[in-house]
Length: 110
Length: 114
Image 1 (cartoon, chains in turn purple, orange):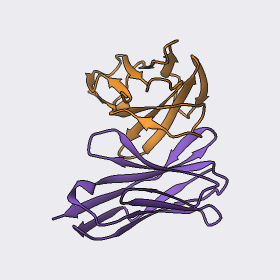
Image 2 (cartoon, helix red, strand yellow):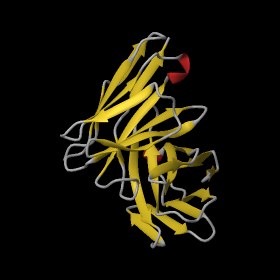
Image 3 (cartoon, rainbow over the protein chains, first blue to last red):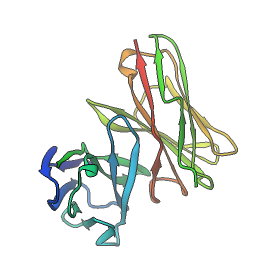
């Protein structure tokens, strides 16, 4: 059974810092991995999708990497801003459904 | 291009009642999946509909059901509500069956059972 873990559970940093959020999964036989952002009480916003054949994806200040063999993905956020404050979730595909991690709650203060 | 639309945004129901939630996917997307989010269990998969057929189901009791219409809109129904059903219910749409293409989520329906 796939288990997805995200470390750290919470993170508070000053504006301008570069951040790394971690996601690990127990079964490396995944089809893809997706990173989402969730603002309090809101739905999920898709940030990046990495197919299993890819090593990384980039969108603006975000860069996500995938190492299937070690069961790890990282989300790198460059030059963080207060507007980046949210919960970040990773999810892997298993049996045609998404298995989500527990999330990292990020706070960026001015 | 309109995103995923869920209605209503908030609901308060009494134990024992039933509730119906609605989800309109992105135009052209044929798959609609439903997830339940609670503080204790996180995000859990309920079911997926594709071309009006349920294709996959999570580990939830039979009180949770759904359907999909010919225009890909989907409804989720929960009967005999329990306090533990209080949660944020999220639907996701994607182009293809399963979770092998990018999933786009709606804003969710916050259900409170009292």
